[in-house]
Amino acid sequence: MTTKRMLSVTKQYPSASGQWGDRAFKWLTLAMALVIFVLIGLIGFELFHGSKLALQKFGWHFLVSSEWDPVNDHYGALPFIFGTLVSSIIALAIAVPISVATAVFLTELAPLWLRQPLTMFIELLAAVPSVILGLWGIFVMVPWLRGHLFPWLQKVFGFLPIFGGPIYGVSILAGGIIVAIMIVPIITSVSREILRSVPGLQREAAYALGATRWEVTRIAVLSYARKGIFGAVILGLGRALGETMAVTMVIGNSPQIVKSLFAPGYTLASVIANEFNEATGDLYPSALFEIALVLLAVTVLVNIFAQMLLKTFAGPSVKPQN
Image (cartoon, rainbow, N blue to C red):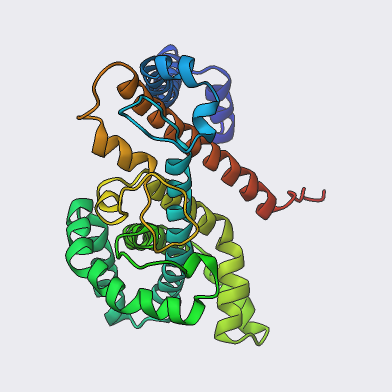
């Protein structure tokens, strides 16, 4: 019996132990995958159960109300949603160009003797605890922003409402900058691995057609890796939405919706960290639980929207011709 025939017989009639092992492996991996859904469901259920009192009292008005008055038991999440989204957008606007450019430099342009030290420092920055960055932000970054960068921005772009008003130092813009510092290592590391996975034939084909290094990077590398880079950006956005300590220490913690980025703000995660231990009564903790539920919902919705954009960027699939 030939080897091909033996393999065919083995495939048609697998041993009993092989069948049991395959089935066990299949169900075990399925159970591990379902654990993720179970955890998300349990978290959502617990948050919903804890926020039931606030949901019954405020309903959908909780999402559009700007009032946060624990003394009179009036609560609204709109200032915190606003602060979370604005600070995250600022962080992405700063971090994405820096991160992608750094990843491109490390994979395409940097000499070999420089790549490993730069990569090591990027990984070290990712390992710095957020509370340490928050302390650095209070004592180093905020005074510098208040004395140098913010006045310059106001002088040059003061005609725009977002750069108007008094300068406090602690502000929504400061919160966005500190979050950008925190997500740069994440986006850079993932983007670097994505760019390293681009086949060398892509680059060689572009060079063979007479493309310059910039054209090779733009057309053959970045275009090929754009889907993975977008995924790296989404990972950074997830970190930005849920960041707590560093943002709490530099954003100002003021529950208001303002036009100026120089004004203090508040985020969903910050208000939970700041006020949960001091929440008294029944309605106050329930409102904070609903804030956590809103944060979970915002994170899920943003990820769904990102997946829709990802499918749009990827374009229609092309079926191979027979």
